[in-house]
Image 1 (cartoon, rainbow, N blue to C red):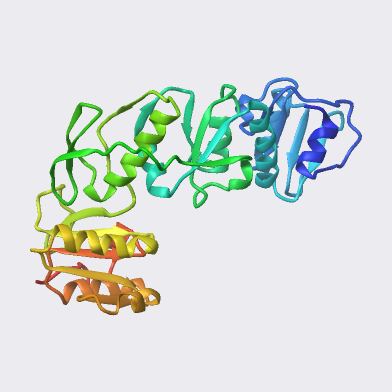
Image 2 (cartoon, helix red, strand yellow):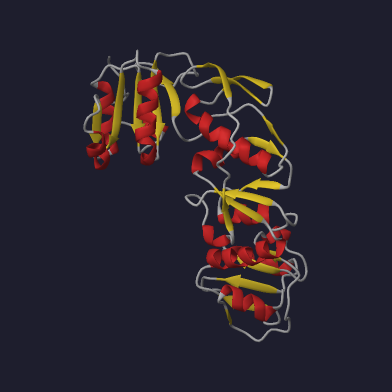
Length: 333
């Protein structure tokens, strides 16, 4: 890439008068720098190594000493934003096909084995750039705007909604499902029936986009996450306790998850612990316990008898937080 084009794309300022005027590649891991590369310095301490390996330019956003005046030193306001602009230009060159989806669908896609012509985009900006910089032309990308900045992409498409082939559920619990799809039987997958409509949509998209895939064993995702516990608030192996805490960080899913539990576990004692900012939405629901601070959650659990507790707005890390008033947390039912 020519220096003047890079300055225009990154809104960067050239702080010296270098001898170089173009770069072979753009790199942000100093160990991978080769002669002729531009190095994006997220960490000032790595610049020396990048120069040693032959960097022709350094792009930086923090006060930095110019060590070699022959190479280009480019100052930007924010190195990560500069990388986003460069990646956007790179993806336009690669003629990628980009689809937007929700977070659950993306996290399911990350567990499906596919060929290299499909990438589910996830991770930090560095992770994303690593995975996308050298992809093949015409690769299909799937991303979630809640997780990844959509400004990286152009011409974003929506997933096809018509003609979705249903998954045939053969056997299910609240947290496991055995099902048939495309005449293949998947036994005791660690995926809740709650997620089956999302999985149907994902598989329909992969087939419509002619992306070969293979389902492997699913692992829990950070939604509707079941944690089996004993009365001492200790996490137990899956399925070995009749006390289950279900964690959901996304408050937008409260209504559908409450409905799912009331339909599929009508026999059970269920409590719903939700942020107080959402309590009015569920004024007609029984056993709703709003909280203003996450420290209120454990006392609510201790004071109530239940089989399942849907806890919204936090994750299971609250189980590891010490209680300042006692040496060990216990649940009494």
